[in-house]
Length: 347
Picture (cartoon, one colour):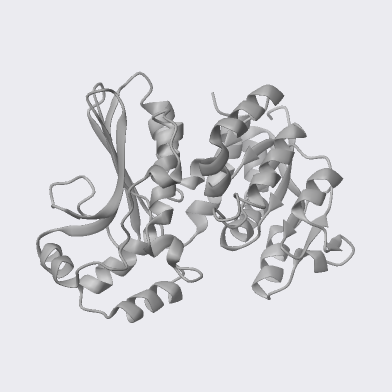
């Protein structure tokens, strides 16, 4: 039996990712304890209407059932705190790691996610987040704060869902010069493009994506290319180690795509919203996001509607491609568990 270590989690954001993550922690509790000697428990959780606190650990299935019924964790009997915010929760209880799975917000300075991450780091907590907002807007600041406090900031789920795209580039390709990154990091656009290419009307394709759970809200974030631009910006910051603002990324979404061009190109290959970084002779990189026709010989030229992928071209390791099939948000949600294990187990 491994010597046991307690890991207390604060979970903020209990939408599609957060509630699935809560279930994973409950379902995997005994296995994680046996394999890694980690007693992992969610001791506090917060959504937009309240929080819940239980030092003995919250039941992930109870959280998921409550959220699916349209209620707040603040309504949990005895342990619920209606109206308690995520920031108040971080101040209220002792924990080892914040898992911040709140909604992405780039229009209001990344809030409230950015403040959640900042406060947790200042309090000496590790942080795992699939929330792109804080990383895009304050990467250098947050990394510096984590180093100063002796804690870790992990965000592998911010790019391509459950695909370990960042770890592949930043860890596994160490020592190499990355000449080019081609990524299809957004599931929604591929789903819609495949249906448009098959002759489906725009509104019907978008509605089908929404019904399948591949699209949330009004779709602007995905369909206009903001999500893909944020992801290539994160790869530039964390893998290529170059400073970039989201406004620096040339971006063309799929909303105004030429349907005749799409159908013609799809007969001979695959059209995807491609987020790329290309190394220039001066050592800098040019970033770009736009719909691209990928020939069958391209490493990403055979992706299905429920797949995302990334290709790294390097000087030492050749060309490496990784692809994920993500039919539900479970892999994206589980990226927080992977982050947690990297912090506590990773070599």
